[in-house]
Length: 138
Image (cartoon, rainbow, N blue to C red; front, top):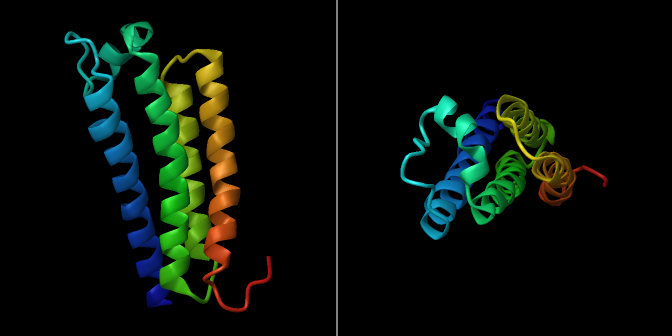
């Protein structure tokens, strides 16, 4: 039980870290936001979403996709006995992705890609995690 709790917490931390690294450190370094946009102010982002470079948006999609897979894989590697930690991590991140899509008015292509790839990442992460959980048939 404790091992599964730790697997869930560590998996979530790894997922969040991967999202931060790809979206913020890499994405914003390669595709900086216009200077007048405050990335910590939701209203500033909403008002200027059309000015954010497409490359930065693609890095957001890549970050969500990669974070879900990494978090689920780590949760499976740590747990070794249950897929529940991986499902919790993946489910929370898919919900966070959907929440982001709902909170920020995005172009249809972006919302569709982000949502569909988050769901695809869940299934890919499930497959990777299950390879490390003993007694699970895929």
